[in-house]
Figure 1 (cartoon, rainbow, N blue to C red):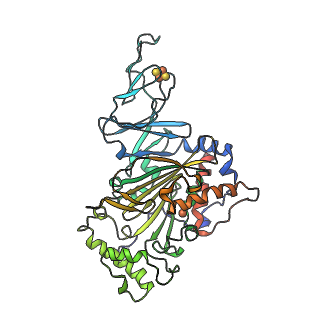
Figure 2: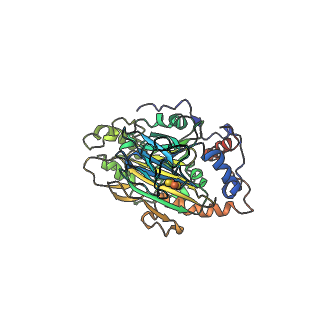
Figure 3: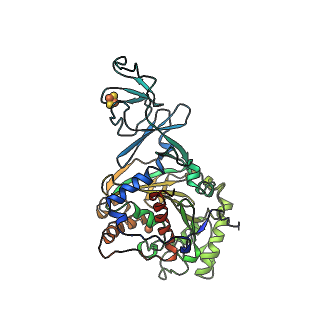
Length: 446
Ligand code: FES
Ligand SMILES: [Fe+2]
């Protein structure tokens, strides 16, 4: 087996002594003043995901990313680069567009009819010579933002002084260079309105301590034994938990219950009954699985395995990118989770769920780990209210649904006069780490 390389920037994500121990008081989750500080010092400084490159195939295709009271347009240029502009007309500020669209020549303002080109330059204005400074066409330009791509996603930042995207993401692009992320197909795409602060999701995705309680279906196929996982955190606030995709040794399904790991072994031509006992099946079976996948990937059309390591073809690195994006890297799927704050109410947020899969030759349908069976094709966006679960019947009892069911309750509990601060175990160290990096932004240390 290949030796696992640990990136030099890695800090032990279970070592609380690496942190200052900043308190995590309730006001962080419901105070408007705190939310305003997040906007002033953090949201306007970080890199945001606008969308996926796959959404913009041709020159003139554009997408709109609304964030709190802001709105940004990203448009594909003739030379296949992307440009990002604030969605605000340079004449008198009218919002130019509301929805993504395809192959436009430019942006036609609905107010006085100015036409801005794909490159953001003003092309046409009514009565262009009636301006004291002369004809503004060819001179005025939409306010542009920095924009770049990584992982099949288009990113932008509102901060001219932010580090370049790849530096901001460090060391995530290096860690995941073997995954052909840009080839993944988004088979499920939903935006869900939740009654909780946006930080709920980053907190939740920074620890696996809740999995046994909230997701009892997971331990039989992703090892939840705390010492089996690698907990890593990185200086810029990102972090990950890498867990083997095999049964946890300490969680046993009742005798006679079908085991999902058995099906996986069989799929890769391994007989689950060939092992003398459960422990051997979990550990040796997992090693045999690596060998079988390496032997069979090509003939089975699993082309995305070509550059992936032994760890990557059988494990689950669950990765949080500061501050609000989580990417779950699975051998055959890539899940994007993101929360974004409500423009005015810190007790609300939106939750984006993008389930992506790597196409396998001959496969027309996939079993998404978060959204169930889906046809293998690019999905359309659906927007829903969570409504205590009633608004998202398609994902009832899925892992992410179970997380969302807890969100409202935690928000309410944190608002209680009885909640003072958190008590974290070592495997939850990254929860506080996230808040400390957030504090670094709020206090001008980043
Ligand atoms: S505000 Fe856009 S043309 Fe006047
Ligand atoms: Fe969870």
